[in-house]
Image (cartoon, rainbow, N blue to C red; front, side, top):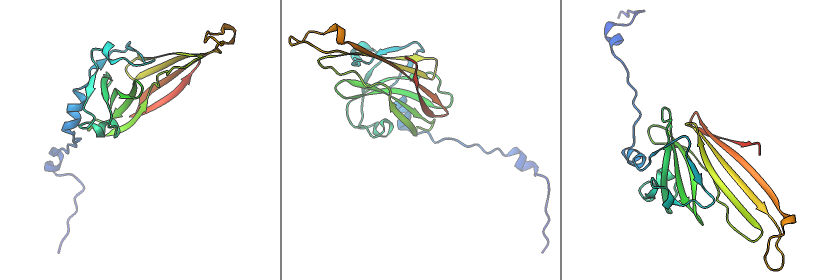
Length: 188
């Protein structure tokens, strides 16, 4: 028996190219069609998100898309996707609570959910409490949530005691980097 070793590639192996394809889930493609691109200057009032004011929002079939909604089974709305889809898909959808709350989800190109995070919590209501919250898109992969809360005492008639008022302002930045959502608290 003779064994010959060669130190060079054959012509045939140089011409052969290996192509690796991501398996794209057809249901994920259907899911993506439910969303519209969001411009980088989009602003949502999330004090209590009102889908009727956003013509691009519509109800999602959460039973069909459950795997893409992180297992969520309740009422859900499509909002849109961030335009930079070169490496990942960043999608905003809403889930129901007392009102709809926006979530940011990041998927790879084959449709695997990499991470999801609620990006606003709404405000709620109560005596001695006022709140405003909004979400702003900045650039192609950055979202800022701004929240302005006022706390105050009320007199026996339920009227605000102005001298007792306190205000709390907060800003949170969400950035999609490398398929992950990074969260930073910004200066007030």
